[in-house]
Image (cartoon, rainbow, N blue to C red; front, side):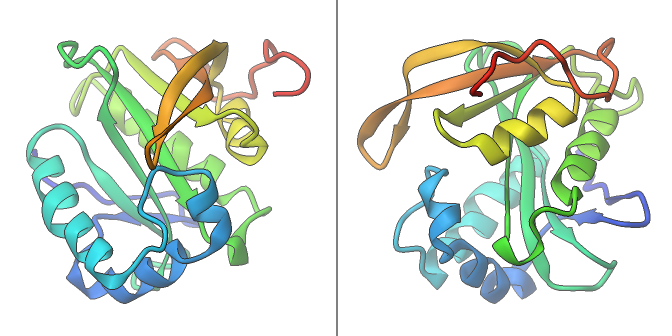
Length: 193
């Protein structure tokens, strides 16, 4: 699959490269990023190198694209978003979306815009043609839940011990968006999620 750049004029999504390794390392050292992801903590430069070489490049070749979120076409990385295999790995028409954003640029709706760009591209009949995109988060990650809700993902439930973070099983939330779901905020989320 050829790499694809996405933009709406406010956010730019492009495949991260080796030139982004230092920015990725700096962002991933923020405690709030490590708190809610399964990435290594502490996060060091070698982890960013492994991410680029072992995940990003092969991912684009295997329908698992990853984009760096930027505030301008050639600006530094301030976040990451990608599609990976869903838990039903045999289903090539479903993916799981994952993302993180630097604390310096949170609260501006950037990740919601990025999620909508990725979903539109992934559902497009001339690209991935996905039938389902899942979102999962560790219970308590209200910021990620807010992004998913604003991007039209419908809450589907609680997965008991549904996530492994650095060797510890944790409960997780799950939601999904289908091609027929509008990108408008979903209203079916329970209070407290």
